[in-house]
Image 1 (cartoon, rainbow over the protein chains, first blue to last red):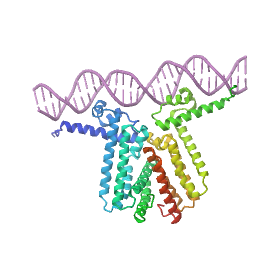
Image 2 (image 1 turned 90 degrees about the horizontal axis):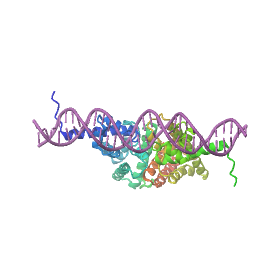
Image 3 (image 1 turned 90 degrees about the vertical axis):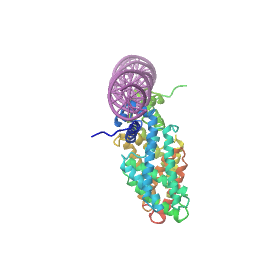
Image 4 (image 1 turned 45 degrees about the vertical axis):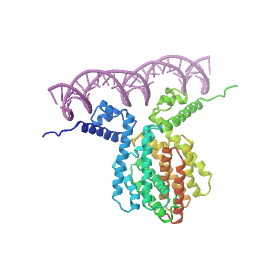
Length: 203
Length: 203
DNA sequence: ATTTAACAATACTGGTCGGTATAGTCAACC
DNA sequence: GGTTGACTATACCGACCAGTATTGTTAAAT
């Protein structure tokens, strides 16, 4: 019946984690601009003052939210990739990961595309996170395409990237992740062509 | 030196047009939520009261803005299509139209995707316009694919749709429309394959 | 020439926003 | 066991928001 001793830093980290959890839920589902700091704090079970003792401003929290979401997405993707041996399957399983990521959430689409829609200013700190996220995905696709022995891996990676973006956005708009399967099928054709004919396909 | 006589209905239509012009500029460039009705009215050179005599609410204006933008996009697209005879070129020129539409504006991306990002509620009246817009593009692609004699025109149209969405979003994020050319190149491969092998490509 | 209606000008409502100030509570820490 | 600091509670700030009410003014319509 004795409550476990909790250190101060543990408490701080726990509070910060809850705040970021709330940000992830409310910012993603309801939009960033539409979500007030008051609602954020309440969802996290803390007061606004506590929020501002962890983050210097709402923008600061927005950046932290996007960065953590990016980190979690990468981890989720890598776990998925680890489940495959064939490099071509790995490459295509990115589509499966995206579909599951979309369907398992509230189907609000790409947090980074949404963020760009809400913050037109390209110099906004959040937009830098958006660029990093997209660059990260592109790089990973390029690595996977290279490992799969695809000819013209940059071009192929770029084409797969476009299919991912298009199907993710569309899936979100319609509330149906099935369209990502279609994109995957097209991607499979592109990958096959890239292996077969020396990368003539759009490279 | 005699000012031209202007009828009352002409004046009303002119005012409404200016309001919609302002909405098109400010909503698109700065985002809908971030743009206040006061700023809208000022940009149009009228007062807020006048705005509310033309539109019953901001949402009402948002819907009108999206609908007019959709109408104009369709007209612009059809003009582009009329410049081509070969049905396969017509199909691919949709990509050119999209690229020019993106580059000629303020590179803020798809107004409908942005709208969906700003209004999470799928029942919001603006979201209905978004659905109509996307459905319209899909239908047109299907018609063009059919006219081009592509096998499996529904599947091909869907694939081209995904490439358009992906490249348009990406072009907007990066502020560079060139990526749409890449999507066009992939689309050309898909179209060629669809004509050649009876629609095996992702259909 | 009178009526009518689209407009300007302005002030206002009630609400929400991001962010701050102040005072007090409680448990980990040394 | 006293000190520290993470936290609560609450009130507040100025700014902005969507939308309304009121009172002109002007020019087309009749």
